[in-house]
Figure 1 (cartoon, rainbow, N blue to C red):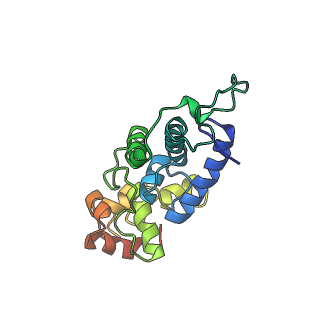
Figure 2 (spheres, rainbow, N blue to C red):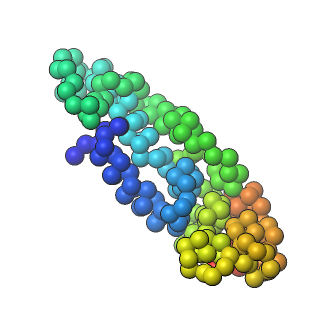
Figure 3 (cartoon, rainbow, N blue to C red):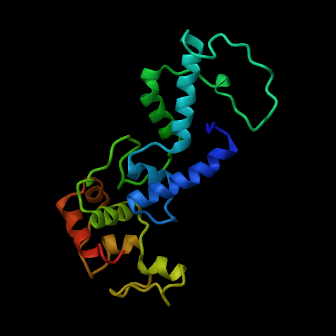
Length: 205
């Protein structure tokens, strides 16, 4: 079954792909989608579908072997069906750059701990699974901190053992006296400082 840009089926498929991406990267459900896909190093599904339709349009218009080459289309009847013949044509050899252009337009986050949209796994991919998950959660500032667990009603309060009234990711990254600290740049580059922080917090967040 094909899934088209704007098709309601795409929303159902995207939800499952988002969940799969969360599992792969170890992210929690509150993680914003733009940050999720930047951490995975893969373009969001809707952008991948749109780019595929753009290249398919180019093939349909220029390739004599395409089954719909020079085809006369009937008038569209269903608004839920978005044919690729109405989209912009993109040459297949420009698909990667077009995909990144769409991704950069869609992703307006300013998190310095993660790489900009790029179809490449961020630094730290060689770490063990638990360390990789901890690194990703620190980069995106979404983890099982006391503040989060309190919101989920799994803790009676959000207090940090260091005395801070609200144990957030920012707290344990830069303020908490219970462990080492690290910066967004350390997290982005997965430096020795970041790995020392991960070693301390990997079983806690």
